[in-house]
Image 1 (cartoon, rainbow, N blue to C red):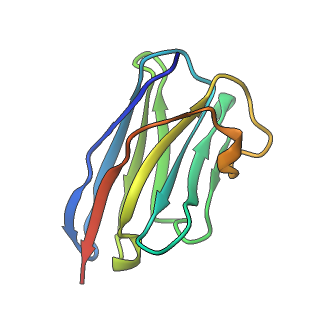
Image 2 (image 1 turned 90 degrees about the vertical axis):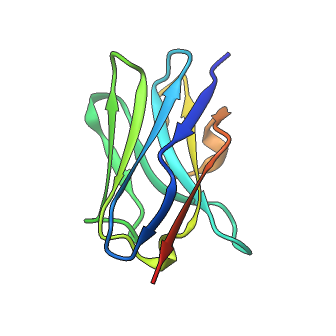
Length: 121
């Protein structure tokens, strides 16, 4: 059983930065971040697969960076140049196997509880 715990959310001014963390209790392979704003469907943000392969949503390219500390089995999302439209609950997701479609939420078996990110204008 894989358990995920996110942290690092909070309130920040537009243009500021935050770093989200996701600690996994078990071994994982593919890991990613999704977000959900009020009144919207959950959307893909970024994913990281073995050998350093990364995928980003167009809305965050150049601003967000996904990374992983393999020794600690911890996933990070560095968010820079934040915009009010980035406001959402951010969720960590993981699976024990390599995924060919990491941008699809249905590919992941495990999810964290979410952490709120609020960006003020």
